[in-house]
Image (tube, rainbow, N blue to C red; front, side):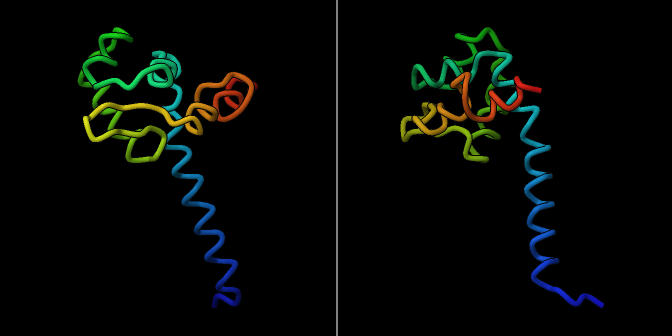
Length: 106
C-alpha cells in the first residue's frame, strides 16, 4: 500500500528526468565532437549546410537535428534553418558554463 502518493509522483518525475538525460547525453557529446553546436551558434544553417560545414554524413546530421530540435536543444526557423538561441548557446557552447562545462570537468 502506498501511503505517500506525492512522494511517489516526485520519484517518478525524477526518474523520467534521469532517463531523458541518459538518452540525450550521447547526442550532446556528438554535437560537441563534430562541432555542430559551434556552427549553429555562429549561423542559421540547413541540414545540408551543417553537414558540409562539419564534414559529417547528411543523414546523420538530419537525424541529430530532428532529435535536438524535439528536445528543445536547438531551434528551427520557418525557412527550415537550424540555430541556437543565446540561451541554448550559453548552455551548449560556452566553455565555462552549462552542460559542456559539466561534462568536461568529469
